[in-house]
View 1 (cartoon, one colour):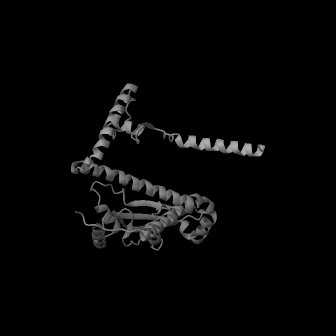
View 2 (view 1 turned 30 degrees about the horizontal axis):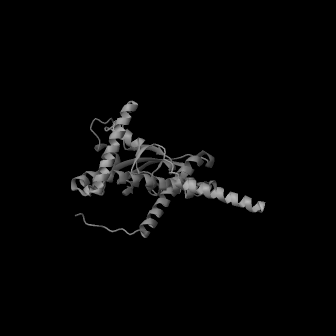
View 3 (view 1 turned 90 degrees about the vertical axis):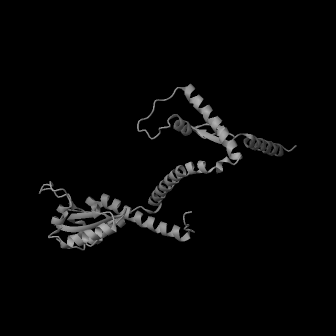
Length: 288
């Protein structure tokens, strides 16, 4: 027989044997899995939760002895077998069981939504949220006058539209911003204490919602209502402005890049949210 054909036949046979062996071999068990029960995995995390039913406790429990771990694992296996049988019988449709499961499922779903939203934000930062040196320099040159100022801000913060509207009316009737702000605190507040005074702030220290408003104000002027994230509403007063001509691009570059990155990320998140919502089919249902 031709030696070349012998060699090819041998290689083909070896490859076929390897493929057949791989197909018969069980899939590798993931790390942390202690047992499988009819294919259902029981993990180290499952066992740890069972060993510590008060798992909300802050301090870590002492490691249990191996025999206790094994006893608890055997109990979990028996329960898993019973649960699988109950499922086969349709007992997982029991109303009381479903009522107990619902808040736990809601908690798990809430964690998944929040965690995956954060991961998407991180992905956006890595893929589209970087700020180049040229972008930072261009922003500095366009906003140099603002970046070389520090603004002294007095604030009044409220948590609802109704309360900030009432504050706005009361503030308009007050003798001064400071008099009204002081009236919102206990009488024992010392005359030298001004909790509403945030001191002198640089551009990057101002919340995004404030910047356009603050830099359009004159010294002593009171702002309209500013609506920020997380249901926060402000009325601000520009108490003072001071120039800081020593500020250079190199001095503010790190903080400027971070601030611009945060702004870009917020814009990306808003755009992504709009795109996802535009493609989604959302149906509102009346609770039954």
